[in-house]
Image (tube, helix red, strand yellow):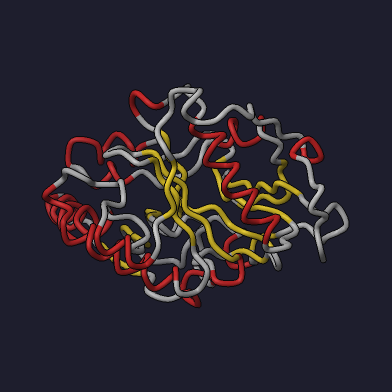
Length: 279
């Protein structure tokens, strides 16, 4: 499919204020290449010394994925304002979305909220999708806002629509660039909302996030040991493992006796565990 160079954002319900970033008093947005990823900060866990190991693992993961078409944009500042996305065929999530791009982490934090950075970053994703002749852009979210997942309500306001669901409350959203293309779907393995029948806790995680290695391998282990709860850790280390996972949230998902609990890494903390597990 070839998208016309006369493509307009209005065609998909998007509108962007066309003034320059300078006119809007906004920081420049830069694209990190494989070379720059090695040299520059990648936003998350910038100052968290506990997560240095995970930070380097995330950096290595980015380098590997960039060789397969993954992209990373952030503002030119020491801040957590960035978007990641890649080819659906290469993504580490159990979805089927041929000829689509898939959003990874998409975060605008702190003083940068409410200033238009989210729309400017999304514009970069749309531009890349159009240039590559993609049929659309996909996001995996919670029906309600879930930690470590994009904001469903905000994406819906930008023209995304729900195209599939998975238990217990995950949605797949799509921003359609080609209305004639088939809608993306979750793989069957991720629809049930439960892991296998393991007793105790089962944690699925990957190095798509710099926080997971420390909080799963150290904090969650200590928290489970303190309560004498069996813990099985499943690290997703390949695209194939991600695409066959029982959870759409392959950054981090925790199950208790096979039942999905949360995507919130803070459950690993002793101070949060009992309260979050009881929900």
